Length: 295
Image (tube, rainbow, N blue to C red; front, side, top):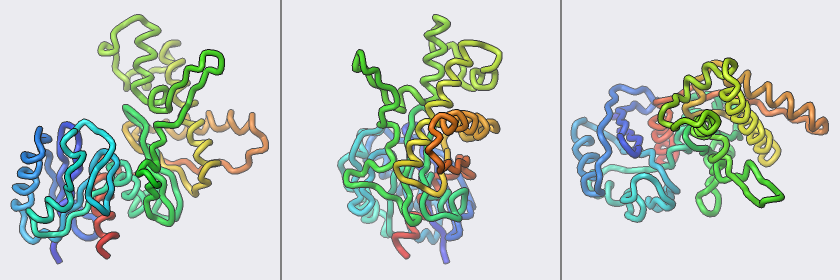
């Protein structure tokens, strides 16, 4: 039958997995992300030839990925991936089919395939970490939108001051970085002296922690509420670094209680879950995308 090579391309490292057609990870590795396009191609080619009988290459990539054309728009920490036809270039080098998809979309597809959204057709996937990303899934397929920006929830305006006309996006005010930044400002210390996990773990013990974390959860619940009524998905799945917290769903649901108590006309409460696949999500989702396209 043969296996598949899946690679999750990040700004600092490539996560590499040898996967079966069923999504079982046989081997995994990590290599430093090259600094040039040619070095990037060479590393993938070398990695590909480390294994025998590879049937295809599945890539999880940052940016606005046009999977059909094989070109990546937008911007990311890797300037050199934006512009060249990565799909065609690697197919020529490797002699096998190559498919690529946006990293947030891959994380969502892992949940669609085998995880928290495997039993529904329509869902939204929120990636909450240093920024806010996500994906919109319709009939178990990613809805990318006309400009490949479907699911870019971080661009949504989350805070608007009508008097000053100042406005901030969900990524700016609702990321974990925003929590650390707010605490640093309140305490008059440098951001680098604070640990985000420490703030979340002990936020009930410090008034500055509590204010910042409370806002984070309210902004997250607000975004979830808006997505429910904009798209009406069957489930909303939360991924990203925050999703590993055992108290996350309780915290979100407490804020949703407040929202629904205020808007009593709103009757459709979001079904909110955390993702099942964390570090392996992008590898699994990249493979699922590959298999779907080549079925």
